Amino acid sequence: MDLPACRDIRRTGHWSEADDRVTLSYDDRFLRRKRLITVQDKAFLVDLAHTTSLEHGDAFQLEDGRLIECIAADEDLLEVTGPDLTRLAWHIGNRHTPCQIEENRLLIQRDHVIQDMLSQIGATLREVVEPFTPEGGAYGHGRTHGHAH
Image 1 (cartoon, rainbow, N blue to C red):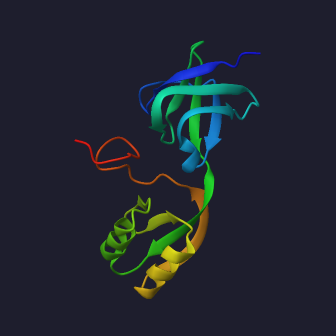
Image 2: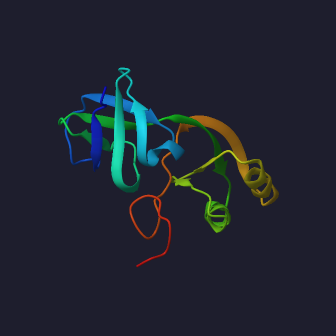
């Protein structure tokens, strides 16, 4: 049986109503070709021209016209706070670690090496479980593979 295919992504704000949803982790939202299962237990094939970074609220446009909303899954994260959040963010970025930047906290994926480094420079750390939507790359939408301009 042929699976319905997705060859196009609709970005948040450029579509209206989803026919179904799929919940994906941050790492799983970076894809080109993959079989996915929706929350209604329906399979479809993502077959994009290029590897693409999806954000929470984007939608897979199936060839038959249906829209499958992409939901950011709850993940094991590390909440980073402290008196000098800018300095902590610099150290995280210097290690090319994906980081969700909020007004009073940073969120990163759990990593004991980064956790130890942040502890040593005065961060307050707390393990949390919630969706992870880090900042995109400076050179394009979402994650990028290089510094081409």
